[in-house]
Image: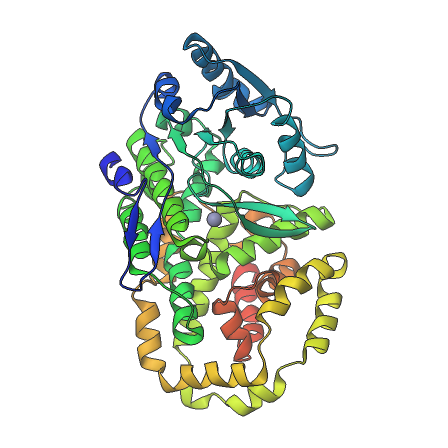
Length: 454
Ligand SMILES: [Zn+2]
């Protein structure tokens, strides 16, 4: 497996499309008991100046103190920062204010390198803060909870909206399956949940390519498929914290992040299912509602959008009344007023994203006509990556990963809003957008709510 990961580190290949696909992450190591190897492994990348280690109270005890001692023994001048949560929070959040705080910490000395010790939040905080300070950084993973370790984007709550922002990826990532397997189980379930979005996120990526001529890459797909091939038989072995299964999960997470890095965006690993999760995160912060780990929410979104693909495929394209759909398209002013009503205090930030993807009548007519006229070919194309929702759900359940809204603490009304409104929060075309274009999203949401809540 390590050889496979190495193949896509410092990767550089130009596709038939003339686009150069690159990764700059040099090391993505998955190995039992690897902490003692880190000092030597980072030497080629460390600039002069002290080395900053950023952790929170939990990851400090898991690995940061031990790593600090190893680095000092190896002669590094280190400063360890234990990040306190913002007032009213239990753990640090990856938002604008906390990134400013971490960037300020990294400005307290002439640091030549930074190391994040943690999972999604700490990695993204240090990734963005190190990017702003132009300092190379590495991550030591403490839980296999999401695929962002090796990516070149950070998930940031910005002005209340969950965004993914481009930034320099880590030069090295270290994942010790012994440490990862001891993480709270929900974080392990979250990691497999994040990866199980692949069939639908890739279908959305293809859909945007077929209907809107957005770029799609077979080179990136090669990396995505390499990661997902590692997952055969892994889900059911995770609840026992099987070390080999956790190692493969970690390897697949590394490859998924490298695929995003090569693509230059989260397109290969984030479609409508992620929008549903992001909507839950945003409303959680804005309105004090509950939320779950990223990948657990993504797993629920994955089952929803995978069933939406099945719902769409069962339609008769001859029944699409394209002119009626074009006539029903709200003007931007009407759409904007709807966003005010639907998102309340989050509306100004949401509007900026929604505006970029709000179609003109001509664009809507063009893509619906293209869909109707190429129906069989487009359905066949997206189906190459899709899997039956029942199969995905059974495997997620075997991993003890949630698959339905009530299991992640999202009540009926909020769940329905997540399905019908989340497409407004990002300017990336997904199955949620297409279903809304066709007037199918609301009836589908009603069916889904009946399934999830009875
Ligand atoms: Zn994700």
